Amino acid sequence: MSEKVILVLVDGMRPDGMMQCGNPFAQELVKNSTYTLNARTVMPSVTLPCHMSLFHSVDPQRHGILTNTYVPQVRPVKGMFDVFEEDDKKCAFFYTWEELRDLSRPDHIHTALCINQHMQADTDIKITDAAIKYINEEAPDFLFLYLGETDEVGGHDCGWMSEQYMKSVSKALSCVEKLQKSVSEDYTIILCADHGGHDRSHGSDLPEDMTIPVVFCGKPFEKNKEISDVSIKDIATTIASLLEVKPAKEWEGRIIS
Image: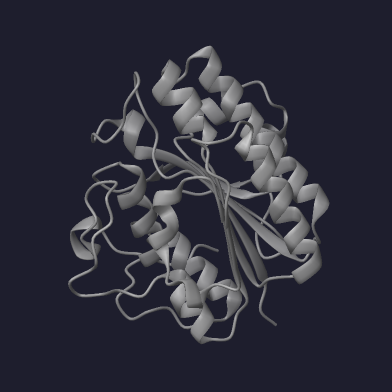
């Protein structure tokens, strides 16, 4: 029987920021999960290219998105939403950065909601609450929840590993904790980041930019198991395996178990 999956991405969350922000949920989460604090994202380590690689399981040079401006793919690769919808999976997308809208065609998503972080405060909390309500009412097979304040309010405004950045990471982790405690245990929750950051920027091949956490928490995964050699491209193939869906033939990631 296939699983149900919630993928939560905290934009710009460095692994050391996650573990040092002072939120005890970070330690609790890894203790109950299969995890790595040394996964690799893709170059350029920029938000939209990283998300495209996450959802399409190929490098940016293959999907063609090299900046935060979307351009149509010359040789299209199907993304997670596209592949899962074709297998009649109910998918949902809750996010706070409008530029992510092109991760999928609208007709491949059952429900999508954007609460624009540039227009409102506390968008991480608001979008999490909306996602929890939807999950408990509609029981989707796959939901993607994007939390963006860590990157925008913490990293770019104040600097990675600054006091405000650490507060933003802790706030995002509290959102993940609330989500986990509010939905059915039948859901596997995967937590990751798209990239890290240094000073007030990211996009380079520095380890601070390229290293991300990836955490798999749910019945199919061992507890307190640290793994290695994980790429952001492995997440799509792993979720497809959990949903018992055949991945797109172009996908390059491996299945994490």
